[in-house]
Image 1 (tube, rainbow, N blue to C red):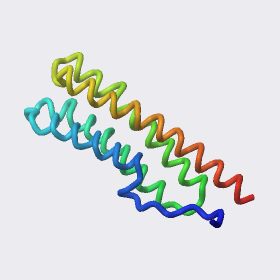
Image 2 (cartoon, helix red, strand yellow; image 1 turned 90 degrees about the horizontal axis):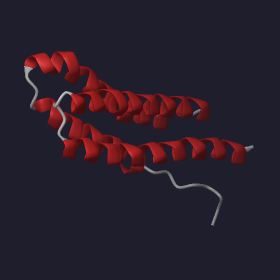
Image 3 (tube, rainbow, N blue to C red; image 1 turned 120 degrees about the horizontal axis):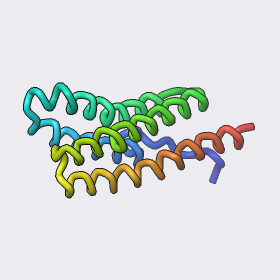
Length: 130
């Protein structure tokens, strides 16, 4: 077997699938909000959560490894903003139910671990190429 790695399509990439799962849960919360909650909390929460997957997709499509890593770091920061700030705030304000909060944080924790692994793997792949 050669040393070449197999290309994985974006939609089969674990970190992207987890990000999309998180976005789907965020959308369910957003859909039930009234106008005022959407404009003051929901829009920013949804934008932060959705940008996790968007930045993974953009980074994955970049050619240079440093560009890829840059977008993965942005994705990681958006994950923190969306979860550690907006979802927590929504939970404190009674917008996000306990079950939703726990389910989303379970996904987010797994995503963060795998995203850190993707960053490390991308760095190591560059080192292996010389």
